[in-house]
Image (tube, rainbow, N blue to C red; front, side, top):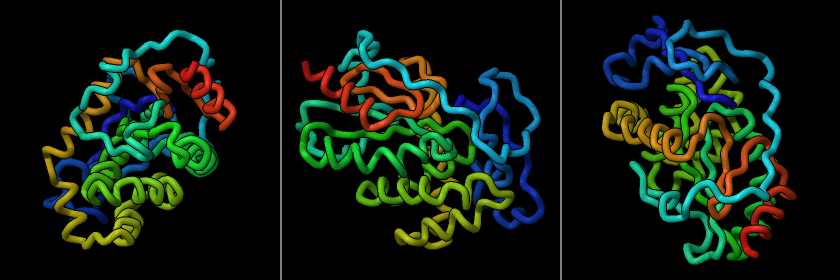
Length: 248
């Protein structure tokens, strides 16, 4: 999915009760993100969601030279990395994802379990998911995942991807979002407190901005396997090839 530049609309009447609490991202929770849009920086009126996702970009070849030096790619950004797998694993797989990206959800539902079992759980690679929200609603969802704590953040992200259709492309996402985060221990007060955390809002936004500038990322999902960039809807075979190539 391509980076969305459209600005959020004002809160609808049904969400007015949350206006005071959800200072920074409440406008995003009143609109539905479009599955794809132009990356132009100028604001445009919000569009209605498309009933089907845009065609996925083709998977990029893994044989080109690395575009990101390891020291630059692994520099700690605005938010600390949460590593899945052994920190000492010889290979590193980094994903830049958006929680409202349908192709990211397809990866996490279909490919991630295979990738985890074959490479992460065996200690051959570690995996890091970094925030690259395509729209304000994805920013809000990433904030909630961070507020869940390091031990529950990835669990909540998995649930948000699995249940993406119930909250990401609906007119009123607050209720389903609240229902999902309650499964990992949130109260409504926790939910509202998290979404008015200005520092966290800025950190999630800066994570995307840094990646876009430093690594020329403009769509999700984008992966780096030991510094080698891969984009598009990848299969487990693509990752097998990329990890094996990087290990040579």
